[in-house]
Every structure is written in structure tokens, then in C-alpha cells.
Length: 318
Image (cartoon, rainbow, N blue to C red; front, side, top):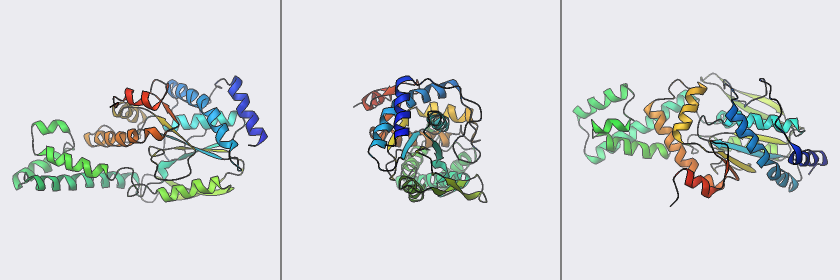
């Protein structure tokens, strides 16, 4: 480990206190993101920073090149961007230059098109499920079309009025689950090439930028010559589907908590629909399935959790 970096980390381990944070700190590089740093994000980042110091010292101590990648994952809207940005700022303040990279720049489709693809997959599989169960008819198709137009076909409450929706939703959820967070949805190979270039010592790397329409795709070349740490903030940062992450951090939350975060964040106009609620629930299952791979788990109440404690908190213990 470089002497300067090692000394900076060891000094912070002994006497670090959270610095005053200005409003204009660098944030994740996803175009259009809004960064509002509230008290809970700061408290969570403070807890994560202290817990990271010995972990990152160990990682850097084993490497020839003084570089590490830390992923900050969790449910959509849980505060990954804020926490990762604060962590990068904190490390910069102690003399360890860092960069916050948003994994949301690396899907295969722009957000609007991916939302449409998710919905298409759910509905197409749902109808196939109805056909398989023998509950499809022209009359039921008319009811289903009306529910789809109203955005209620993914609402489990509607199954009480329309029993045919049970087979529709079950089949749709199953197929949607097989799509979310997979290589069909995310370009893991492209992101991995960026992380590998950084880990291998590249001074300048072209980074993808993805806006919210089909003309907003471009690349920016970034100088990493004196950067020691990349913070990858992304729902799928602990998915295990790509290489290059040294320390996976999981910010724990329930789907309801992440839904409230999304609403307050104002990122998506349809953040409170039954379909988005379903997507959050399915993504949560994938996060939970990979939680044992995280080296650090932090709860919504800003406590570090063991995997067993996480399982208890999420009521997943067997």
C-alpha cells in the first residue's frame, strides 16, 4: 500500500469525525439524478465510512496497484447515490481520492424503453399463463384490456374481483423475475470492462452516460490517474454477474421503504403504480438472495448487520 494512503486511512481510523458537508459535493454520474442529502443519509454514510476503513486498508494492502472498487447496492431509491457520494467525499477529505460511478448508465435500454420492456414481458407471459390455465376468453380479454389501460392488471387486490388475474399475475411475475437484473436487462460486460481497466491501472477511461431519451447516449473520458477508489452505486452492485468489485456494501430496506424513497426523490413519475411496486418486490428478492455475499450490511436505522441479523430483520430466517 502507498505510504500516503495507508497513513491517511490509519489516521482516520483513530480520530475521524464527520466533516461539514457542502451542498455541491460531487455525486453519482447518472445524468438527471437529484442529490438531496438528508440527516439519515449522512448518518448511514458515517456508519459505513467507519466500517469501511479497515476493510479498504486490507484490500489495498494486498494489491500492487493502489486501487479498489466498492459497490453500494440496495433497493431502488434506498439512498445509494447519496451514501456513495458522501463516502467519496469523506475519502477525499482524508486524502484518498475517489469517484462515484452510477451503474444505471449501463442497462441495455434507456429507462423508458426498459420500463416498456418490463411491462411487455409481464403482460405477454401473463396472457400465456391464462391460456395454459384455461381461463382466457374474448370476454375476459376485454376485462383484462380495461385493467391494463387503467394500470391495475398488476394489482394483487384486483384478483378478488377478477379471479382470472391470479394465473395472469403469477405467470407474469415469474417471467419478469427471470428478466430483472439479468444480462438481458443490464450490460454487465461493458461495466466490467470499465472496472477492469481501473483495477489494471488505466489513467484515462471512457465512461458511458445514459439520459432518459434515445438521443441521450454519449461517453466522457475521465482521468483516474490519481484516483484510488471507485464507489459503484447500483441496485445490482452485489449481483455477482460481473467482476471487479472488492467490497460489496448492501443498504438494507423493505420494498415499502424503497417506494417511499423513490417518491421523495422524484426520479420517476410512475414510482407508485402497482406494477412498479411489483418490480420493487421482485428486485428485493434478488437482493436478499445475494445478501450473504455483501461484506457490509447497513440497516435503514443505520446499524451494521451480520447476515444472520439481516435475515432476522427481513423475517427470512428458516
